[in-house]
Length: 151
Image 1 (cartoon, helix red, strand yellow):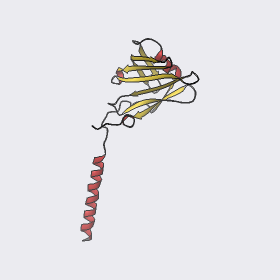
Image 2 (cartoon, one colour):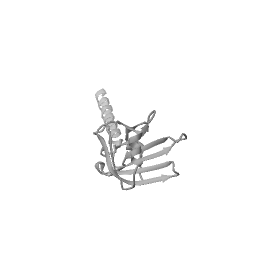
Image 3 (cartoon, one colour):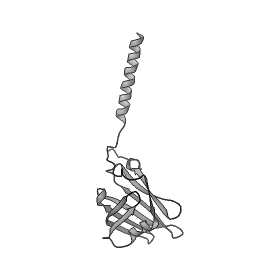
Image 4 (cartoon, rainbow, N blue to C red):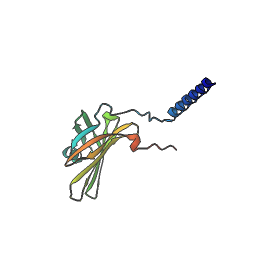
């Protein structure tokens, strides 16, 4: 009788463990930046170069880690003379947009924010500011930043 009880307990545990594994959802989305480092350094001068020129300007920004962002500026917006946004379409990365915003802080110093992501891919980059005039593109998971809406 003890063997039957043990066997039933093991059977139930296996059934529950299979069920709990089946409940986990994976994004199933492909990764676009698997061959690039988790952190990429860039300077204020590199980011500022995106804001020089007209709408039809091609951009070629070479960053450490063998990441080259090359494409055409598709949108340029200026608001209140202290807020500018540039969007670059990147053909080498399935035409995702690299969106960079430049704003002035209280001391009239430029501050940059940027995202390199697409909802169709599981990874991307977010620009973070360090001390001084240095910035880093940090790899992110798009599922954490862009939650799925199940409707």
